[in-house]
Length: 218
Length: 248
Image 1 (tube, rainbow over the protein chains, first blue to last red):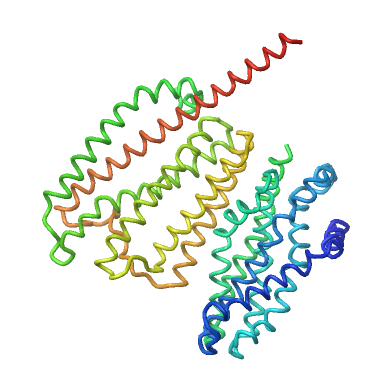
Image 2 (tube, helix red, strand yellow):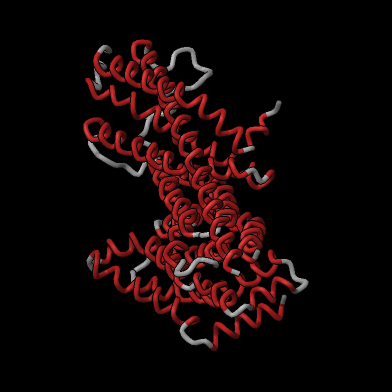
């Protein structure tokens, strides 16, 4: 399991693109927002938490179609399936590697981009916390979507269609927490609910994804 | 004699052929009677005027949308557990009906909301969760279409249906948390003395009955079509194999 985790990390690092691409995408989305809604500071600081969350979510989505497809195409997935590791574990590990290469960098840069969007000072800590709690769930749900569409040629668009509605609860609680904190309110409740959603997803989703993958490998 | 006998496609087709004409006729009768009664022979509401009459389309379609979703969930579960093909095909057959019911509910709601709430659309929990469900089932149908092998497609979509159900319920309560509602509370529930004033209530019941029968007829009909398509494909494949064997 550990070997698979580090292998995925190394692949993502060395393939170029993969690692930085999500970040660059996140940056561009955030930079484009003032162009589309106007650069008024008061407006930007009001929508900043939502924009940052949405950007992070889209950046997560970007690399999902490669999550399993590469290994599917070159047959590595079949080899992994015959290894003593259960498929559930393989999917979970791959989702974890995806989070380390996409989710974690997003969490780290989010406050920097918050400055660009004039995010109120009270919002930073909770924004980072909510992203740190929410992005693992995004990766895991995405892994399920990737497992669903792995056998389909050009499944990228279908993948987004399937995964985005499943992102709704995470997005609602995450963005709500960040927004409340930015407004100077108490963000405890949405943060706890977000943690609950995240924990439940991490606990249950590997089984769904493993089952789906088993069907696809049949 | 048990319910599972109808997992046999031949038996299922025989029964559905006997039931179908009654379903079509009943649906047509109920809808014509209910809608005419509702549209032309009930008084206008004293505050809402004649817009109240959209209830005869809006409530039954929304009700059936939720029920269809539930039926698809049960059909998916049966497919996963007992692997009856009819069940998977019924889930597939119900999905487009579901989408149409949801669309009717959303559109009639918008038409009613314009004069009453002063807006076509509001980000109200009920409306939002219906929209999310709608988007979700677009994905469901797209997945059915995208996977070529029918058994794989049935497996994948039924797991998606289960996972989607959990998330749909989750979203339903999450949006509650996110925004306060404009939509009124439940109009119909079994444990209330009087739900809607009787003049409106009776034609509404007839309309609901009509929608249920219409749904039943559509799903049975579409499932029968799916079974026959499947059978035709199998026959063509067998012909092809036999031709190949002759050549060799």
